[in-house]
Length: 265
Image (cartoon, rainbow, N blue to C red; front, side):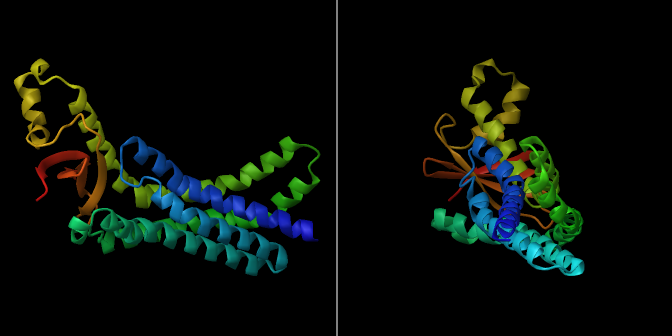
């Protein structure tokens, strides 16, 4: 019996880890490539709570025999995961940014209640659906793993279960991280281009297009880091900060197009 509890708990932990990996791991990888500040922060903050709650849910699923009670557990997990994936980027991350850049700490405003509430509602519905299905097959998956004659059969059963947590994580990432990630990636592509291009090779039209960046008093070939400062109510117009070895600038990115840039005073 102890081994049964142990397996269910381990599988639950894996489920939570997969959700965290898809929700924030992919985001962290893209942000790291785009020279973002603290790219792995969300993943670091979310992995342990998700693993703990997943393991607890797996253990309770084996402990409780009532199917409706089990479903209630997984619905609760879905609600917790959704709340966590909205809490971290919009409430906790700006606090860390304020610690990283105390001189502009009061400018980090991550408030868009209507947009966040709408995204949270959609994410909750989709996550509940994914985890309800996962909860229904959780016991059968563990039975299949125990009764499997080979590692391939056990792995297939586990992967099928984990796919639902991956789907829930993808939904969370798409709703809560994508719109905060895309402006950083867009601006990074421009800065990388500026760091390698020779202005003498550009025509007048291209030079005018790059003037919003080149007017900044920074060395585009020096190391830099990017971070979100604030955004509008629909998270469509985003102010992205740029740190060039302590020299700070900012650009307004609207619908993945930089519209204006200036030095920070």
